Length: 400
Image (cartoon, rainbow, N blue to C red):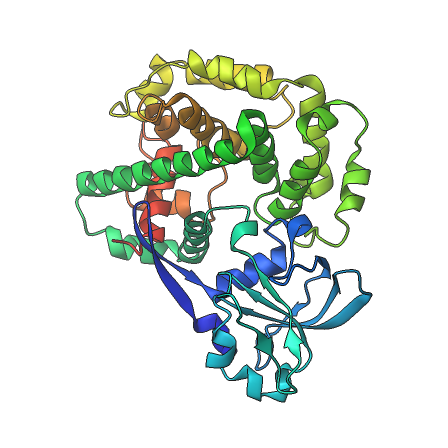
């Protein structure tokens, strides 16, 4: 087994400590979830990633047969090794192992100390690429998503065994607490995005990422960075051309027809064409959004504050009725509401709407687990976004 998959770093985040593993860094490299256009070695040579390589789960380098262009040189084929820190190359004794002599790039998370050089067993210097400043997301956000992906795979029966013995009111309190933590994290990450990209850019790239989630968010994000909203609204872009510009980066196998990249790109092209100023339209709507008490039951909140009408308004005035189903609900809960809360300092005012909103794309088994626990299913107790997010928060928090 490749030892790098076992390594991790523990760091302090906004709401407690979290771990970031080399296995997660491998995924980030493989999926290209970083600004590849700005990739440069620590020595200052441009890195063009033609193909990241094949993940190697056996001994030896982490990725085989990667295809890269370094600086102004020709395309080269070789291996890629991934570590959190450049010093791990020596710690793992790769400099003494001829199995690593085909490594053409040493990918690390943290920039190495000045003067540190990676060398193979022949003494050849191996270029080093540090990803920290290139990542699309905060480290804590990557770590949380990884924890959710891992923990949400638990069978519903195991969730029931862990929580089912608690009184229902206590389960509901725990879920609400975890939901609130996830809400605050989403706002934190939305605020970072706004600071980096501005309001329009944050909205534009955030929605493209949601449309690509979870298999194709990296190429969607890159397209959002290359082509601003005005280009998508101009009519000059086509789904086929956008697909071609990220050739080789798309995941299509096992992706449902509704989530195929060509379909999602076509939806957003239509959205931008119909609502070219949609970020401003959402900002205008958000300033007058009702303040929904989180303590109400979901059924009474939806009725009293006319959620069905709000849903129609967002779908029409912001999205041009181009996206529907669970992905539309995810756009509202993971994109629009956190962005508005971050921009207008409405963390408390929008929390009730986020809690009681219709649930979006949840991992398989979450709605069933909520029903088995008795939290949903009876009259007046629908699956809401807050309950789904609360259970995800409990899972990502190791069930504490």
